[in-house]
Image 1 (tube, rainbow, N blue to C red):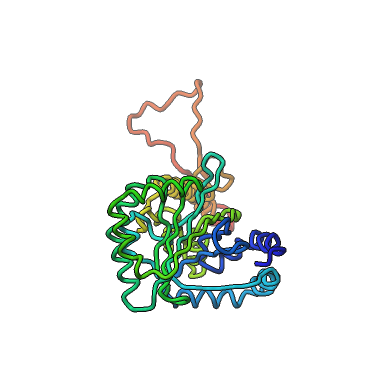
Image 2: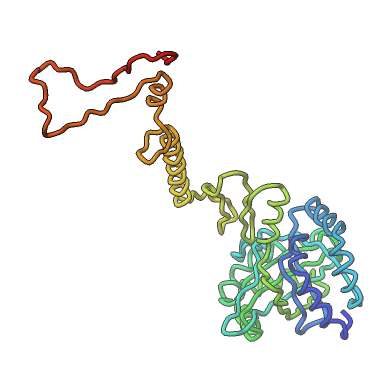
Length: 352
């Protein structure tokens, strides 16, 4: 970037971070503190394959807010721009005990200090066997380096697929610049690591190291937001972490799928939602029953006559309610019939 434009570039980038996450699989952005070219920013993205990259590039190209807003203004701050595509060396990452790069997330401050990142770049001599030999040597030696380096964490190790070919990079995270320096000294005393470096050195033309700092973008949390937007764009629900996204449909909030630390989807059942659904169903059933009884005249507070009373009224009948009085003596008959409905004397034109 142009020295006079770096503050404006970082401000524009900060303001548009959510837009960037919604359009691109953005993992983070770093600025160079020392080593090599200063006033530069390194962006880190993760694509599953070239088709995945093409789809996101098409989405960003179709966004007028991205093209006419952020890019149009940020380009005036740039002096040079470069893009490369790297393929991860899965064997080296596994040997170092490193998680997949797509799970990368910014680390919180430790004792008020921001983490430091070391970017090491190897430019190998031309030839088809240079990269495979280096990768094989690192697979053997890097476990011993990691054992001697208790503070460093490997973020990425890979080689170029597009860009300056026969290039290999490794990105390490340390709690401080001093911790990075101490780790390098400790690894030099490990015989297996020295053998690894001795094996790869003849094929290396240029070796460079840079100290980077992660630019603290607002709520910079890796791929979680982006992957959720990917689920929404497909009309699905989704919950994501840094390394995977679990998209699903339906469930009504009772059955969901949550991403795990091993980048798999785990089924979750919310028992509280089940009880809430049961209680709501019971309330609806009881409510419907009460409404039916109310309008059917079966409740004492109902202003509507019961169906039986309605039939009696339709046929001109009335119900005689017996009245007991202490002055009246009951009939001395064991077979006296109980009070009943009494048909009144017919009148002219009365319903019978």
